[in-house]
Image 1 (spheres, rainbow, N blue to C red):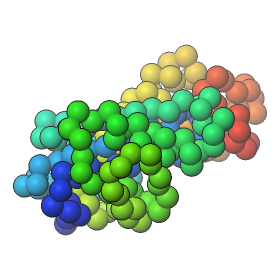
Image 2 (cartoon, rainbow, N blue to C red):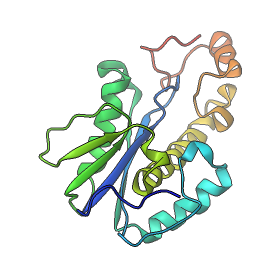
Image 3 (cartoon, rainbow, N blue to C red):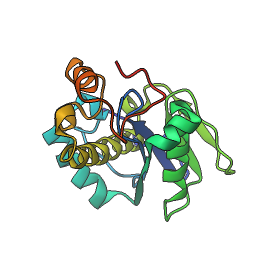
Length: 190
């Protein structure tokens, strides 16, 4: 079972999704959970079925003290690179919280910020801390929803199924139909 939080301060967990995609934004979420929050099913979004993620998303939204989800678009990704775009997304998600955190825990090993809030990077944090796992679920479900919407006008790429990740089908569609405004031009696309 995951640990509720890393510190006794007002703490937010943050995580991002979509770094390895060929198309679509990188999406980050920041979540502040109550200190007494418990949920045995909460874990890294990649370990959950779509149905379970949607179920947990509702619980997180209802029970979180605060949360925020931010998309950073492909133009920004192409301009500043995917790592910097991911960190920008997490910083924007944190800054968008109405409740100011006193401490931040970040999934992964790279993060920087201009704000004065102390933070700690935690490798595989979405498998260790509930607030990071909650952030991973909100980021994943929000990005998946956006890719489903974008797929309506870009059905050749099957983003409903692959969410912009580099599947064989997606790469073959790029070769056959070319790229869209939603593809990351700074990435090797096929």
